[in-house]
Length: 390
Image (cartoon, rainbow, N blue to C red):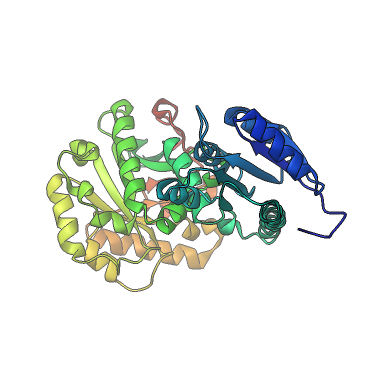
């Protein structure tokens, strides 16, 4: 137990046994902790939302919500607060669940006072370090590390997956003056994974790329019911999605509309981890899909991706378009890429068009299919995107 007389902490204590709750409250109050007793796990969450708590100490076996249920909910809202699980009936399953959800400690009853004090005090100190680390990462701009450890990330990813939805951005043909396609863009209501790249990175770290890929394709298939007839849908794939048998399942949701779908694979990600790329892409084409190479001009140098994919469509990266109306080097590169892609019978979509000057310059360089904020931002409602300026 600490000898630091100034050490203070607020402990949320949860146990459905009133006598035990009182006894533990008295015990923990002695070293100077401020104890907030609670007989109900759901009410404990209300206390967490209302004020600062340094540590949650919860019984495992409770009617209604168990200690594991409480831990799961705490992790949905707070990645850093230490949760200590206390049980008189330890078992491997509950211990494993506690570890997977990021419990600080799993203690068995009866427990001596010294061990309890030491564990709680250590949890308080480490919890405060975790909060300070998060603040440091935010200050230094290292947003990719703000999601925390694997247990925390699993909770955030599950929440993001449960609130996943697709937004759509139009691709416009200047020559025909109309929308010819929509790109489906990943969205979620999970605040810590609002950035699609962060969402994808979480899937990679959790080895859940296939889980996310299937959810995306299912969501696109569901939204396609409301898409206007005769308009294609561009859907992004992670390279590892090529290894997923669901992608080539003729009964998968997206396979039913394969003739309307262009599958985008980015040049920013390597295909090295995928074997027999040409055969896999050929299988997709037999199902009716077309293939696009995305971010052309901003990914890996060389020609391996184009050789392996033989894309039907090339999408020029937005970095080539930014300020192109005043940048002669960008103009030369974009004109060359448009011409070379067309020689290979590839349609060309120019992404990232934001100003009238960029639009006019791209068109003068031979561009026809354009995409970007100049036309529309992504939204879930197709009818808002059908008449952008051309």
